[in-house]
Length: 177
Image (tube, rainbow, N blue to C red):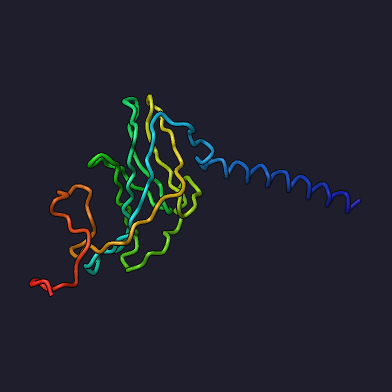
C-alpha cells in the first residue's frame, strides 16, 4: 500500500512539474518569429570593438542592411549575443551599438539576463519591428563578422558625423614612416 501511495505521489509530482516547466518556457518569444516578413534583409554583419580609455569597455557594432523596406513597418531593436540595442537608420542601413556591461577589456559573451526573451546562437540575431501596431520578431542566421576595431577616444556613437569617425588607428608616424 505504501508503494502505491509513493507511485501516485511521484506521478502527480511529475505532472505538476511538467506543467510548471512548460509554462515557464512559454515566456520565450522565439516561437513567434515571423516568416516571411514584409521586408527583406541583405546579409547582416557585425564588428567587435574596444575603447582606448580606461572605462570605455567593449561592445559590438551590428549592421542590418534592409533591401526592401515596407512603409507599414517600423524597425525597432535587435537582440544579439545576450545584448539588446536600439536600431537607428543611418546611410541606408540600420545600426545598433551593443555595449557590454563590463568595463574590462573582454570579448566574452554577456551573461543572459533573466528577462532576455530569446535563446539564440552566436551567429544569430532577432529583430523587433512594429507592423500595423503589433510587435513582431524576425530571426536572422549566419551573421558575418568583420575585423574588430579600436576607438581611441571611447565607445562609438551612432549619432556622430561619419566623416569624422575614426574606424581604425595606424601605427605609422605622422611623416608616414
